[in-house]
Image 1 (cartoon, rainbow, N blue to C red):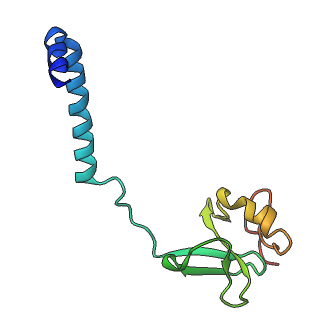
Image 2: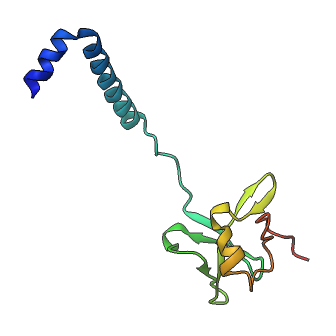
Image 3: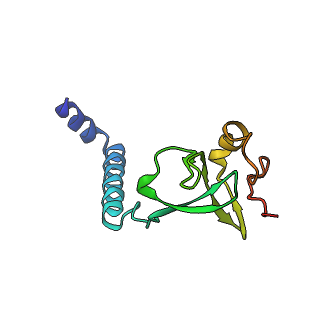
Amino acid sequence: MLNAFREWCDRNPKPALGIGGGLLLVVVIVFARSLFGGSNLPVADTVRMVCVQSGKIYNLDREDINMFPMTNPKTGDRTLVPITERNGHEYVPKRYAALITDQLKDVNQYIDPKTLELKEKS
């Protein structure tokens, strides 16, 4: 099989150079990613969570988070969802929208189900 490939490369030098160049490019990209890193971004040790029932914000250790909604440390109820800041407003990330609109809809008092924005406490 290898001999057949070598013979084909001898008869077709331009495509063979293209294949060799492509393989070299892949090797260079893999080496550069390993050298300079692609996933070495710092990750926060804590995650900001909001209680949909009280509106209180908590910072939980990332290692303690296993599933959503998380348990509120004060009440013991599973009412905590992740929250992030954008343009000066607090939002629940879109990937957790179903928690707000389905699972927590009966207890949610502080997250707008349409915009996922944290409502101001009155």
